[in-house]
Amino acid sequence: MALYSRAGRPKPQGGGLELASWYFMRLSGVALFVLALGHFSLEHFLFDPSQETSAWIFNQRWNSLFWRSFDWLLLMMVVLHAFLGMRTITMDYLKGGRRTLALYTLYLVGAVIFVMGTIVVLSVPLTMPS
Image (cartoon, rainbow, N blue to C red; front, side, top):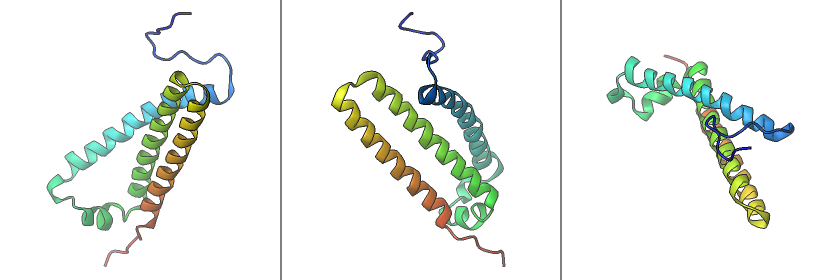
């Protein structure tokens, strides 16, 4: 088997976690493209960026459950895609105890960022228009 593939990292031969993460990386890449393009279009074409302060985001945009869910989904896809990418790099280049330490650290940091992002999105109270 060649060490380099023009199609990227070759598909794992077995099953389980490695195959699932291989598929997830491809699907999350497509999802990130769509979500990021939607986010960019929304923020720069539909609304005036000079008027979008943090107060506007909290009072207008995040007052809708749809946009709050959209932003949370974008944030979580970025976190999970980056986490699995770093996991792949760690698995490829580190061996032994260094790999174990790096993976445990990566799991901890990924979980903390996931929880912190979720808390931020969920803790902003919905306000009723007056």
